[in-house]
Image (cartoon, rainbow, N blue to C red):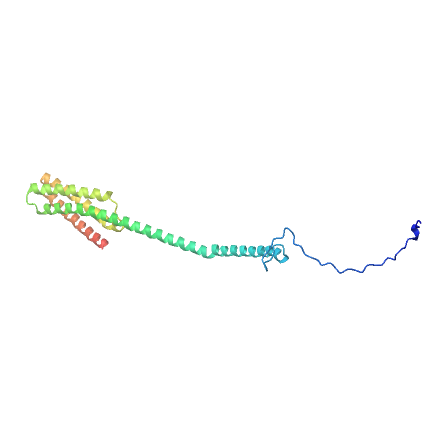
Length: 224
């Protein structure tokens, strides 16, 4: 017998009892990098903030370093440069002074060499002239004395005379000039047979050689 579909037995619907909550299981991402226990991971919040702190500290260190360099450049380094410059200038002054003293010593030695050579010849012929006892000997001695005196005068006139010996050199020049005039008059008197000219020539020559001796005394005092 056909069953009426509307007459099917209908069971009352009952609500199912709620089941227990399912456990939540954390599954790591495939891109997670395992880290050692206790080691912070790069994406942790406190780690991500570290670079900013490092940058701030680095900037402070740079500022401090620049300040220190500035202090060194303006203070210690500047003082060192000034000391170096002062030492350099002092060394240059000492070298320049030593060079001046060396040049002055060389000039003095050169002048004394010139003086010793020429004064020796002049003094020797003066002795020969005052000691002669014959006309020919006196005439030769007078001629030699004139030649040596002229040579001495020319040499000292062209020589570099040290400043400290200038006074003595002027006295030498005056004595030589007087001796040259005396020799010329003496030779002229001998050649003319004029006894008064010869006597006057000897008188002037003695005065010239006396002045020459005084100049030598002054020279010795200046060198002492």
